[in-house]
Structures are given as structure tokens and as C-alpha cells.
Image (cartoon, rainbow, N blue to C red; front, side):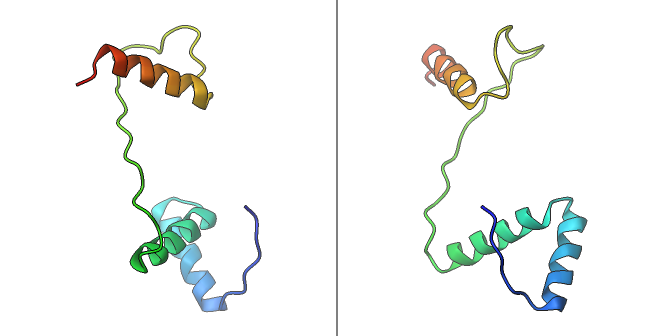
Length: 84
């Protein structure tokens, strides 16, 4: 979501520097910073842990790697085959 915030010039410069050093965008840096502050205050629930399985070789033909639904269907199928 796009929004406008007023930040101290020094604070913004430092955030940009750290984001660049970490190889992430300023937006990602700000998301992480706000998420961390909210978590410290106890206002954010624990993130859901997802387990991804990898297989050797190319993905199955017909699987759209850019479709969330296709990927979740593939994970559901893999879990039915190996519920461990």
C-alpha cells in the first residue's frame, strides 16, 4: 500500500543506507522495521511457517510458477502423497 510519512532527513538517509547495504528496497526495509516494532509491542501474531519441498529437475509441465493457486495446489498434492 502506498502512503506518505514524514521522517527526519537523517533517519531517512540512514534507512536508505541500511536498505541498500542489505540489498532490499526502502519499502521492504520500512515494512521490516514497522513489523519489528509491532512484534516488540506484542501487537503482531506469529507468522505462519510454511514448509516447501524441492525436487530435482525442472518443474512439472503445466505448472504456472507465477500462480499462487497452482503452487498451493501442488503443495497440497505433495502433502497428500507424503503426510509426514
